[in-house]
Image 1 (cartoon, protein in one colour):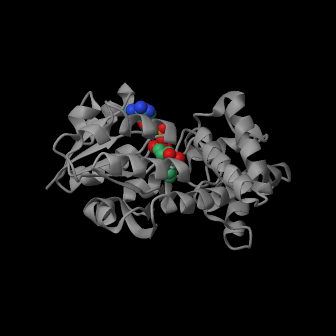
Image 2 (cartoon, rainbow, N blue to C red; image 1 turned 90 degrees about the vertical axis):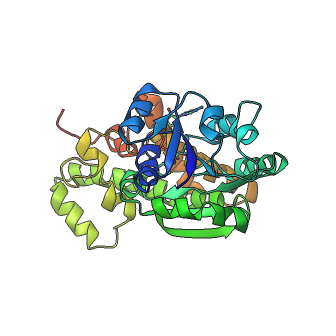
Length: 298
Ligand code: NAD
């Protein structure tokens, strides 16, 4: 059994790190929020106060943080993980950060004598709880293999996509599709409601029709139909509006750079940005349906 560090114990970090604890590894965790630290402790993580304490004597460091900004802050610099990890240990970042961040971090890790893999995930909190996330890995083969015994505990479809940054490339493209699908699923659900269609009848028919998609099926945005959808739990995240907006922004920026028209991604980004500005940035992404006028019982 190994010692590992886990930085970022939020909606995804807690259920994912629990699989490592359950497998018998010692998981030392760091998070800036007391609520997150408390939930992690309940799940068997040994919560420590500093990154230095978390990463000494570890075989691997895992990060599951909101954006590239936080990942860069915890991994680099004199107090960061790269500076205190044992030589040869590998850091794998499960967060969605974008290609540039992953490539830069990989370079900085190499300079400090440690490994780095970008390893973004798909499947949501439910996938994290079940340990059946899809993982898209970018980096050197040796580094991917070094963390395999841990990544296998959180995912059941793990693909080494290519060199550093390729995992992020895959993830950003996937999440552009998911964000657009969620946006159209929200507006369609509001339209169906205005047309007087029963939400359950509407949901069941779409699942057998051509409008079906993963976001609609798993995260149906009206309450009381899909028990596991955040819409059935007061729109509590789940996957926060601010995070899907971040992912859509990354996709739109790549489109601009590579001269690809990202018209629907831009529209979806604007809708989620508007929802965030209305005060729902920390709520689940299904709350876009409320912003678009869904009527739900208080
Ligand atoms: P989250 O906000 O719930 O969790 C992030 C955690 O990081 C929080 O507990 C926060 O306190 C902590 N944190 C922030 N800055 C920190 C710092 N400097 N040091 C230590 N801890 C810090 O987010 P999440 O939903 O768990 O998502 C994490 C990442 O995974 C994001 O990049 C997101 O886009 C991606 N993702 C999320 C989902 C999902 O369904 N929630 C699915 C796939 C991928």
